[in-house]
Length: 149
Image (cartoon, rainbow, N blue to C red):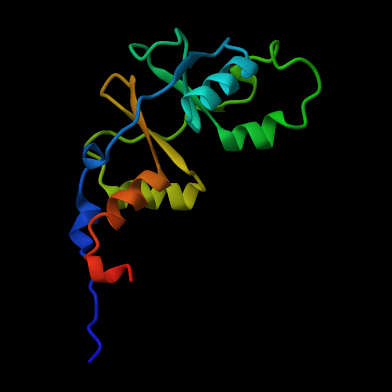
């Protein structure tokens, strides 16, 4: 007899705050790309939030991700110590809040081709970043043991 496994769709209505978070990296718009890349590598982080001040208590103005590095930096000639994040970041990225549902986050990540979505507070200050991997890991953790073979 074959047992049909059913996905618990109510998980998609869980808020972003249910996802285990990692510390967010924040740099200023004037930070050199070389510095941001070194920080990302050292901290094993795939994105950096950009604010005017380089602090979390300042509104987010952009995000710099590993995809930005590949798409906007790799072909650049010149010294990456002189190239500011403001020249290669994604400005004013769409952001979620801690109350945004996983369904909403996945929907916008899908239609916008995003792998990372910043989560901000009411003042648009960055709290953390959620990746597609973070959401998939959360969803898979709820699977019954017999669903994963």
